[in-house]
Length: 115
Image (cartoon, rainbow, N blue to C red; front, top):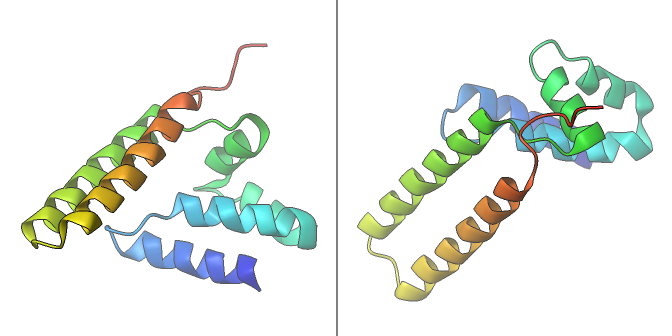
């Protein structure tokens, strides 16, 4: 059920430009890998997202383009957050989370390693 809910969120992300898509499909794939090989195969063979999911699943690759989009999206969201004048602890919390996410993304390879 969680995998299906995550696929639903990923589909919403296709329609809404401010919501990510691939991360929900990656999480759904993690659920389906153990519970439904048929649905895992469906995601891995998807014409649009399958290659990205296969690269993540086998090598933990995050394409450079995705890293840029993530960084720009987080920066835009952070700027909007700051402009809405929330309490300082909210700004600090969000900044810490976003920095941790970017640090993680930057430590992932951008291409499949050469054999």
